[in-house]
Structure formats: C-alpha cells, structure tokens
Amino acid sequence: MAGGVCLANAAYIPAKGLLADALMERAWSKSQKRGAAVLPWPWMDAQPLARLSVPRLGKSEILLDVGTGQALGFAPSHLQQTPRPGQPGLSVIAAHKNTHFAFLEQLKTDDVIQVENIDGNATDFKVTRFEIVNKDNSGIDLTAPKTTAQIALVTCYPFSTLSYGGPLRYIVYAEEV
Image 1 (cartoon, rainbow, N blue to C red):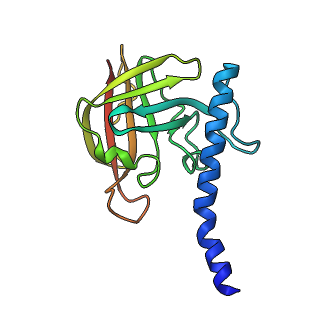
Image 2 (cartoon, helix red, strand yellow; image 1 turned 135 degrees about the vertical axis):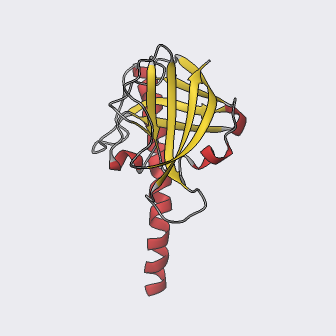
Image 3 (cartoon, rainbow, N blue to C red; image 1 turned 45 degrees about the vertical axis):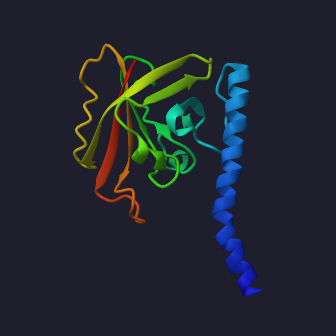
C-alpha cells in the first residue's frame, strides 16, 4: 500500500501537466472560435493570449496573458507591463527552463519565431541575439522608444541544473521580420 501511495504521488505532477496542456489547447481553440480569450479552467488567473511557434524545432506553446506564479506553472506568460507580442516595443515573455522554454537552448541566430494572436494574425520574429544576465540586472530596457515589434524570451539559466530560480537568466531577443 505504501508503494502504491508513493507511485501515485510520483504520477500526480506529470498527470496534472498533461491535463493542463489539454485544457490550454481547448481554451486556445475556443478563444479562436469566439474571437475572445476563454479561461482554461474556472479558477485559473490567466487566459490564452497567443501561440508562440518555432517551425525549425517543431515547438509550439500557448502564451498566457499575465505572468503570475500560477500562470508560469502552466505556460509561457506575457509580462503585462510590456507591449503585447506584435505591437511596437519590446514584449517580454517568461517561462520555466525545464518545461515550456527548454527549447530556448536549441535556438540559433536567424531562427524564426512566430506569434499568432487569437484573431489568427501572426507576426514573424527573427532571433537576433542571446544574453546571460543577472536576474537583478537584466539590462532589458522597457523605456526605450521602439518603432518595431520585438520579443524577449526569458528563462532561468543554466539549463543543465536541476535547481530553480538561481541568479542567472537566459534571454533570447528577436525582432519583427
């Protein structure tokens, strides 16, 4: 019986993740049909904003509209104090390094990142540079005037460690094509 309890505990988090992914996909589909965001489940504090895809890697993630702790546990999240992806300025999107943004380690300069909004309009971005920074001094300038759309994808670093929340962040910068 104790072994069964341990096995159930070990399976809980992966099962919760699979269910959350399915509910996010369903919310994205409903959001596109309605033309307005739909909550993935009633007590969620965020809703789908866009879909981020990297064709070369075959990766696709639903972006949530707020970067709260709960939202980051389920999907990449847009930081609300920044412009929405595709709008002029630097849009900052954050996610965990060992789940939704694990693929950032495989990105290369000139890779294309596509961001599709609920209305089906998409913006293509080209990766321009990478930075490893201290979390307390990221160098991300949110005040600089921008005439083009840009994105910064942010996650913890290094990718190979099992620990969370260390002092370093990995940032991928991309500009609208």
